[in-house]
Image (cartoon, rainbow, N blue to C red; front, side, top):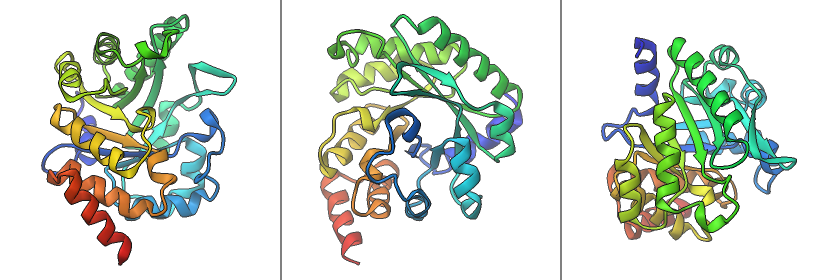
Length: 269
């Protein structure tokens, strides 16, 4: 591992406990301009005020909206995306050199596995991983077993284990994947790979703030490095306060009850 990669990883995992709270606003190309994403510059200001460990976005949004926040919260540049017209396949939309030029501390690559498009997904992930590491950049990968036809199979431990181990074998530093539904089974996922494992909060079917906080608590208890949230944050009335509350769970070992109390206090200020 090049020194630069260590430097960038240390920026992403800067808290003494080495855990990770990432926020993503890379949804529009993949899912459409969802509620909460319409006023993106204002949203990014609210997110940065909560001081997450990193913020993931596509290159154009970074160029338009991130200049004033540079050096405050690390930037992860999304290099691939799926879309409403190709929901089962990520395609490359940004190069490693573009991510470097934007000042990114890492690249983010998506891969949908265990389906017919897996060969091209692996080729893209492997190539971008190699290019990033050669330039001293860490790689975060969103690897989901969503190629399987039965949605109930997407969160089965054996399929999630395959996804995270695949990431490690292709050189990914942090693999974001789907939650298996309980602490014990997800602990076996974490144990199955030498890569760091995070959970995609948006794919967990959450319906309340308490559920968001509980998922973060469960992932940490299972030995995961942390969690990333998108919709849970930008569709909430006070994104800044919720990010701070999640940080209390991930970095300060708060219980869900204590985090909810903290959140309510932040909102009432």
